[in-house]
Image 1 (cartoon, rainbow, N blue to C red):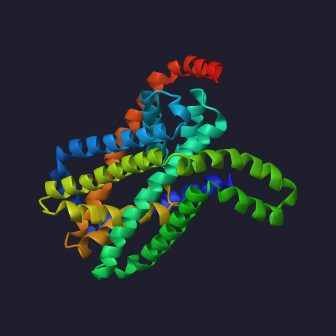
Image 2 (cartoon, one colour; image 1 turned 30 degrees about the horizontal axis):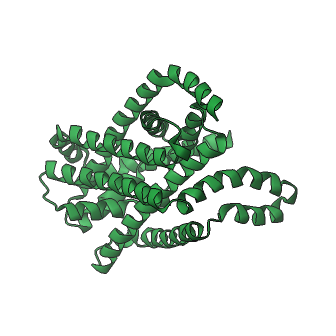
Image 3 (tube, one colour; image 1 turned 135 degrees about the vertical axis):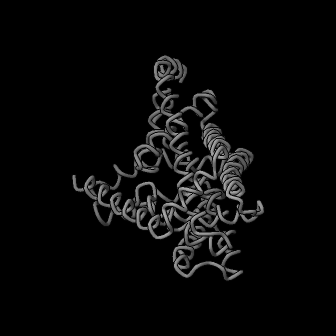
Length: 334
């Protein structure tokens, strides 16, 4: 109950922040820019749908022996997108939901959660590298707004830690999460340490196997994830063009990389509501674009995500009947 109240309060704060940002910039100006986007919204939505499909392909690549059809895994990814956007719970619900759906399709529990964890890690790792490159460029050029300086430094520090951890796991074939949890649990709750670690180790073993066992597969997954991030940058390029704000593809990549820290630093804000719009409004003027364009792009991205998410839930509804027979076949072969 307390958790739910906290979620509602943070969501309410996000709504208030969004209203204040829109009011400060001018609702009429933002509404005019949204109209100016026009049919380009279709292109932006299609780019995001392709991005979602690529994440489904990356997830499929992490599965053991690719036990499930590609089409089914991509459908699961679209369904998770729908849950994430329509509930504003972000990865807290979407990622476990993907694992649960994989389990329903016949994948063992540890393999399902491990594969989802591996894809989520590699997606964020590739995005973190892109963010680090973009933020480094902005810092070097001294155009990063002061208000974003501390979040940018937090992001860069996080990228370094995440990268080092993945390199260690990839080279040694040993996970770092289970030993860390064991050490912490023995201090806090020693009686439950072994039971807790026994749940984590099988999942982490799957994740580590993706990082360690097959370098070619790892490179392929990272390649797909980078392609997905590139599509997000193209969204910005298309949106700026529709607004009559001519920008290079490189600038669009810098913007996309720079805003990636929003989800990492403000993960506790449902859907980063209000926060995303505020960051876009601060960042784009530093690159020579109006703040209203930043808010418009942030709002347009919400619309296209809702459209793709709703499609994902429709896909889930249409394929639910086929899940149980497929799961029975997979388990009978396991």
